[in-house]
Length: 282
Ligand SMILES: C[S@@+](CC[C@H](N)C(=O)[O-])C[C@H]1O[C@@H](n2cnc3c(N)ncnc32)[C@H](O)[C@@H]1O
Image (cartoon, rainbow, N blue to C red; front, side, top):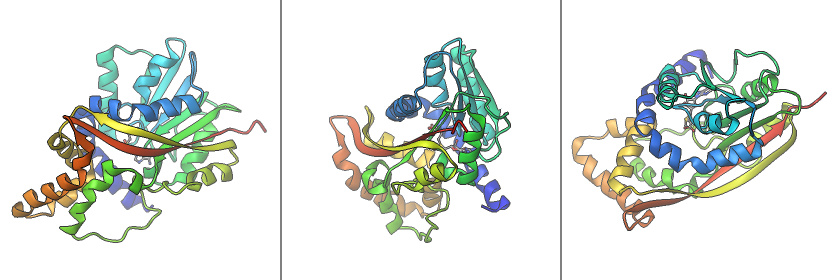
């Protein structure tokens, strides 16, 4: 990614930060299975020093801080200042003392070699400006034999939480995207991120498919508001519509999503990949 593209991408995350803060409780609940998957794969336990790369509004850092306990610590990082501020404010509200914050990008981590026991990243690797360097950096800053673990989305077809809103594309012009450009589904192809870890000399590289339900007691209207606020690409598409198009667009999405809203509850099947490896001891 060219530097000007990186800056634009960062501006977009900066603009999204207030929505990730607004929906923090829902986000934590909806994606809790992903945090559990990371904690399990990276063997996170009491007393460990954990690095969270692209921690956004604070997850999985906030959850991991209680797992590692007072003898351990978490360093929550993100390149968007607004994300770091939101995460830090939440840690303050909870009175957490074993969690620290640093504004930085995955491809240039301002930490010494072997500074952490483990590095994790939830739903962020797809947005790294340079994923190959990001993975190498994660391996550099963990101890020998330390785990690095990334969770990314599986294919869009297996994730109707996202694909149901694609009907908007019937109403707006959509440009063809480079499959290697930052996007939630950049690493959906099995083996793609695992290959980057293997090429970076990680050992015991494992890719696990994680199927779960994104469940919340929310209505379609609440889902619609959450999606159209949290997603920068949806915010842009919506901004490109004329007012008369808004009701038919919402109706079309409601039709596509109807079967996932039953008895006042949202329940989408979802698929992610947890990709992990260990730093070689040599
Ligand atoms: C989908 S959010 C996930 C946030 C959080 N980990 C979570 O699961 O709630 C993606 C995050 O990746 C961050 N990000 C974007 N580019 C990045 C980069 N080059 N290095 C590290 N993180 C990056 C964004 O700022 C954003 O906070």
